[in-house]
Image 1: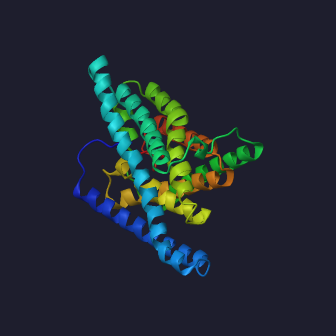
Image 2: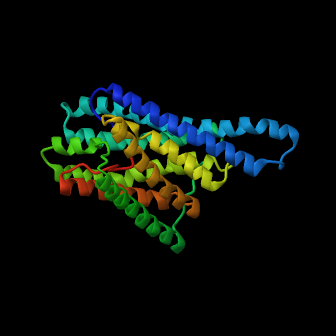
Image 3: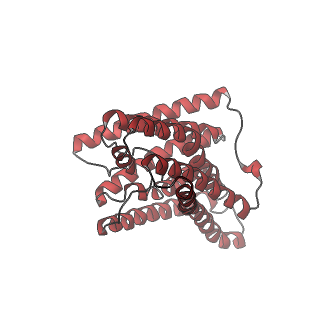
Amino acid sequence: MWAAGSRSMESSVALSGSLLAATLLSLVVLGAESTRTRRGSDGDEDRGRRPWRTAEAVAVAVAFGFAGLVAILVWNALLVSVVRGVAGADSTLRRTVVLQVSNGLGTVTGAVLYLQYAERGWEYVDLRRPTRLDAGYGFAGLVVIGGTFVAVNAAMRVFGIEGAAHGTSDLLAETANPALLTGVFVVTSVLVIGPGEELLYRNVVQKSLYDEFSRPVSVVLASVVFAAVHFSAYADGTPLQVLTSLTVVFALSLTLGAVYERTDNVLVPAVVHGLFNASQFALIAASETDVLAVALLP
């Protein structure tokens, strides 16, 4: 979610540090994976091209991951203009609905752009009726992602570490009807945010990396991209708070990536993602306090 207000110098430092760390991690994993899995398996000419192919795969994944973020901005600007023209003055509820819808439209737009770029049809989208095994992985994913969230928060309290506040808390504080706004967040998390983000960051970003990397490495690299695009949600915190929150988002994203990798069905991580977000919004409304990495949305 987009945080209001100007970005401080500390936020810029945090962004630079986070992106540098993500880049270094990506390069280390990329180099190790390429050396381990490709050594001696290709001809001389193919080996010469492989570094370029792996670099291209990472570049495409990053580009379309951030393309979704740009598309969210564009859709938000368009919808804000339309709503103001029709309904007049803004309200917290209207801004929230517009933002949530923009998130969904933006991530879907990013996915569609990739399908056009890669000349792939809709059959590339891994969407089908879940099996019992899918349901089992989904339940396990909810348990793991919830357990990870609780464990990390407990550890942070023990060591006195704070995460950056999420912009959702500000919106809930501004509205005269927090219960209604929470309901909007819960519903859109399940029906819009979860499906849209998982379509882009799992079915496009993660899956596009499968051709050049093993599936576990693809999960890690996609999670780096996923965490990076969430910077704007926490950008008003200190560098340490921002880095802490993005690290938690990265860890939670690993679970979503693993669920998708096991099921090859984007609906399963979409449900896990949506339900986790919804539970965090409900928790904020109930506790009236900030919660670390409250939601996995930009």
